[in-house]
Length: 215
Figure (tube, rainbow, N blue to C red):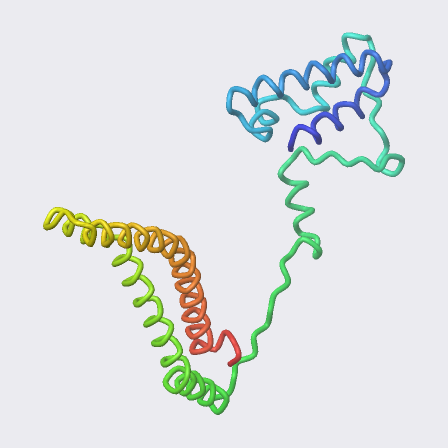
């Protein structure tokens, strides 16, 4: 039971009181929930520590010399879900059950073509596509790393010979370093997406081989 359910049920049981009294009592329990939540408790834990809304209402009404007016089963649409038994009964309702998917077992003939098809697809198409994709990633990262490290060569040239050509090499290396940093910002998400796609494709392959997915 969460806070909203708790307060609604408590309010229903206190309907014999005036609106002012109801609001004062509900505000008291609103503050109690806020205090307990600040201490790190969940709404479920708080309601487990408290008495049921019905018991609380009976205690409060007793102070007003009133008895709880229990609604009959057909005259009130509110149902109290305070016990695990009621919860279990509701879960027995067919609308609460997950639909059971009946998987038809594929025949050996269909399974053969599924396995043969996935092998053919990987050997004659996807292997070369992934090889080309991996080559692009390798070249991209190699260039990115070389560009980022190029200022080392520029600094070395300055140390070797302080002249106009050395400063020119240093300037070019700094520009290449900037290009490499931009390339790294591009290559990182590109590589991450590539590995996610590869992971998804391999998972699909396993599902096909197990007969869980159609080719």
